[in-house]
Image (cartoon, rainbow, N blue to C red):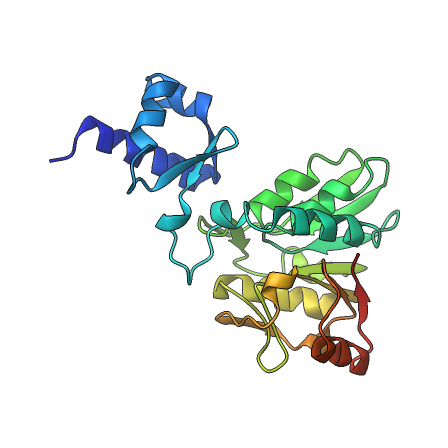
Length: 255
């Protein structure tokens, strides 16, 4: 029999899935209970919700290790992603048109772009859009379509309405796996149509990946390493990857 505790936890879970995270105060208001009640509800070993930095998110243990969950990935390799963001942001120049991929590294790039720099940002994920709309001189183009909760992306019904009319100067791509044998991969197949469009349309392709992604292979194939012009990462590459980037004339940018 489902208890009131169970009902509240399920309500929290649904609310978090809609917005990726939920502030503790907002959760208490939504359920009409105290913040302490919320804390008690989630303070169990099997609760699918946890509290991080004042926000309720889906607990890491509730996410299958083989799947991508934005709320979980957001809290991994944070310092590395911030470092990559600062390095990558320097590539954006005034009046550039820039494609921004989905994922949790990409918003770090946007955060590091100076507020007084005018540019156009193309995106297809909710968290990237929210970062771009906070930049006062950014013209934001959001590709609409079907919304997917797990990775917070929109997949266009047709490319002809928006994307096929655009030619970005730069395209930033986020990867979940970087392998010399299997190429560049991500978790979700539903991201591939937009990623592949950006590969064809953009003048320069920049791959961003922290050191934990190297040697990893995920289920959805983005392209070969040779398809990218630059690689931005947080640590110096090991010899085999350094050799591969040199062989393919890929510029490596790290600390």
